[in-house]
Image (cartoon, rainbow, N blue to C red):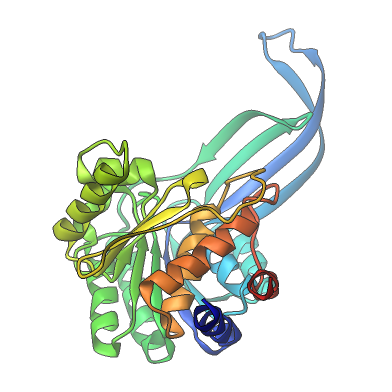
Length: 326
């Protein structure tokens, strides 16, 4: 155990020495906070008197934000609209130290998820988005950006929300870069796009996504192992990491079988964005020399910290080091 902890600490100390590329569906999470004092005379709905608004990086941008919080340089790749919210997203990302060199303008609007919250409860969510596959000009711009940036990349993460950015040509280009440079390529998947992930290093579905991808219900350790094995065989990945909420996570490797990690969370307040934290920490662990089980152990620690915070949260390298010291 002491040797493992030493290796984990050494990897965390190197987090700032590797640059990762995060590609996927970039979103802006907008929160409108207010109070409800009456019901509308127009319809049986509450009238929310707005008190403040906040915006956060969402989707693939939140994965990039997690990497920066852990100390890693990161380049974000995806599409935003030629609109005010697109520029807001770029500015917010840059203020966090995220390189937006691979964020291109598309012909569709910036994806925005607006949550109206009154007295601590979400009243309604409004989604402004397009799920269509990118047009040729946007794909061409992204591919050219990836080719230009490839020499400085140490790992690739795809954060897929099935909004159209993750497509055949994009994945082919990223696979080419991964193969040429010998760098890990991880995907936080959506079952509908499973056919796009063949040959990546590792996928990180949650339990529901794993059930859909494997075509079977996960009820116990045996079915968990079967599901992971089916996904690995179907996609030809090196490994599969299934996140299981309060039950921790499970790693499947063909040569080692199933490796389960119980949750490290002491208290769970909010699981929002925990999957983003897992794929960020897992990738950094692998890039910095950890085995898959060691990286999974590290990712589990990171997720345990994040779910103990309220809202879309991140974890720092210092917080992980404190836990490893204990």
